[in-house]
Length: 185
Image 1: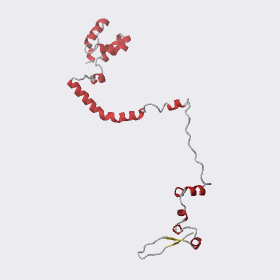
Image 2 (image 1 turned 30 degrees about the vertical axis):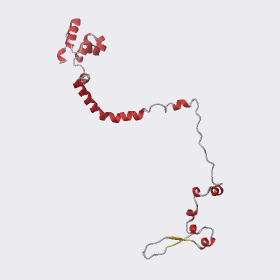
Image 3 (image 1 turned 90 degrees about the vertical axis):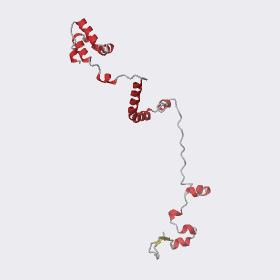
């Protein structure tokens, strides 16, 4: 083992120096450059050794390299691999979810301008959201006098769109009962 000597210099800084013991200095087995180095630093790494030294010195320590072999593809493996083929929809859906909220106001503005210019005609969204104002009146009338026609309620309103008063006139003639239109206005 080496003894640690701590000589003081004039600048009052400590300088660490490893001094070899008498046994190490007399042995002479190490080159002069390596005699002052600790034992861990004296060992030369494997990658710096010559090929002949590496084979001779570490023959017992070396373990045989394991080579990875590729799996053979069997007929049954195609079913497992079929999931990895094709388009990966996850990233595409994520991209659309991120981009669409930012683009929606722009797209609505472009479509409204094209509609005012007459290039396209968009359906009236207010009509779809609010529905037909005569629907509750017709539903009440059909519930009382023709329950079999309740399933065709929307089709009937679509057929007479804009002419609901004429529809109620025909229903009054057919069933002899007046439709309560006053509630619908």
